[in-house]
Image 1 (cartoon, rainbow, N blue to C red):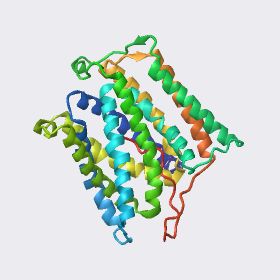
Image 2 (image 1 turned 180 degrees about the vertical axis):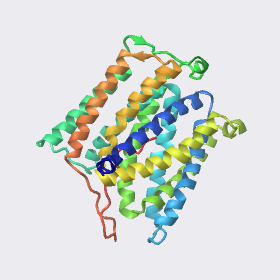
Image 3 (image 1 turned 90 degrees about the vertical axis):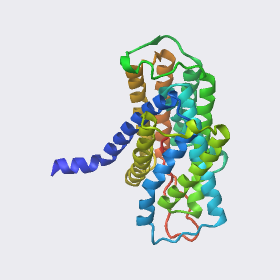
Image 4 (image 1 turned 45 degrees about the vertical axis):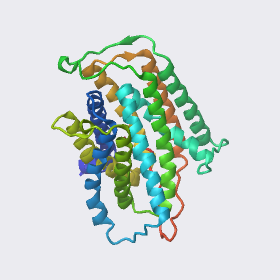
Amino acid sequence: MEMKNLFMASRPVLAMLLLQALGTAMQLLLKVALNKGAFVYAFVVYRHAIATVCVAPLAFFFERNKEKKLTFEVWFWLFMNAITGVTMAVGLFYYGVRDTTATFASNMINLVPIITFAFSTVFGIEKLLLKTKAGKMKIAGTIICLVGALITILYKGKSFHIGHVHMLENSIIKKTHWARGTVMLLSSCLSLAIWYIVQVELLKVFPLKYWGTMLTFIIAAAQSTVMGLCLNRSKAAWQLEWNLQLATIIYSGAVVTPAIFLLVSWTVKKRGPTFPSVFNPLALIAVAFLEALIFGEEISLGSLLGMSIVIAGLYSFLWGRRQEPVVLPRPSGAAREVSRVPESAGL
């Protein structure tokens, strides 16, 4: 009986550990697939087409009897939700991973809650509350994270290798566009931060999470198709073969994307919106170790120092955030409140 109670109490922790493991595997597979020549926007289109198929049964089963008013305002926010949360955020992130490393990209993503907080303050969604201890911790965490990010970007220091598996030695192409990749990753973080704010508005007018997610994926796939065709119309860029690229697309679309949505939503309901973000650094540490061990990527003193500072700043910020739970306003005509969107949706 005690073991059963312990397991029941540990389920949110186990769910987040599973999610970090799935995310770590995806980051490493993604890095290899992109550096072997996979076209980014073809990847985005196929991933979210598969994710749509996986989420659709949930929408039709759990929300089939709920009223769906698809007004112009709803379609507008769905469009903005798709372009900020998928088309731009995911597309730019993939380009950033291709041009840098999976470790560096994972580290940059930890800045998203900080940037979201800055935007939310500017737009009046949140208050600084500088006179409270929680408010001071959030500001301190923000500053510490930014310092850590700057160290990661600007300082390298001594480097060392853990080792690598010989057959994967050529899987990672030498980095030649570090500056461009950094710009792409920072742009992805900005887009994600805007996406969280967009979701606030979307949930006001369309609080159906499964239908909203499914329609967002459909719109994002269409947007990414247009974007991709503008960048590359060659048949080879869009062609799928039985290789690592296809396996990564299926894994990310059928496993990781639904898992992120379902596990984060369930955990937020059990433990609150800040809880999932606490586990994000675990994936960063795992990606850094495995990328160095398997692919032979070098680990620099600057990256280790920067990662440590970013993680410390993130936890300081999340501690302050936890003291100030945020609830979205009631959607028009709704009889219940919608809990705040979690800060850990993943990529």
